[in-house]
Length: 234
Image (cartoon, rainbow, N blue to C red; front, side, top):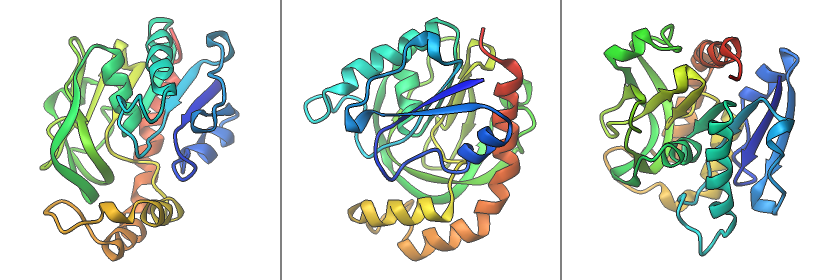
């Protein structure tokens, strides 16, 4: 398949998703919106992946391209493309489906458990374990769009993942694609966010978590991406 991904910051790329996609023969194309690159034509891709970033989805004054991106993601969903949103990308997907995006009750930064909901067992991601540890780095959250299925939750964030359109649209607030290099980049670029709060880990804890939990994420990422790959676009 032809995969296009939207990148919002130099330090937040596809991570472990890129080798997974390339090894399976998918054509991968980046759209670095923070550099002013144009969004791809809808006819030029089958699968859209929307990555994270340090901004909020409504920070239009600082990032005018956000207005165009929100419209673009909505069009991709309506056209029946596979759409995967990660962190900020998940919030974009929620917004495109008519749900509210807002500040979370508290920041969640670090390696924390994610629990699958009962509905997750009947979803396209049914092979994901009942509980696992993933990387989180967000201050905002989303409501679950009407007609979508909540798949996961955590202690700090009630809405961690949802699917819509029969699994062809998937939003993950957490990061399964995290690598040690990616964690180091986040620490280097966003050190002011590592404050002493209940669900914010230190740089040392973040690096230790990447070494401990990073390798375990590979089969989970394979499960999620493989499920979407099998579904294909509408």
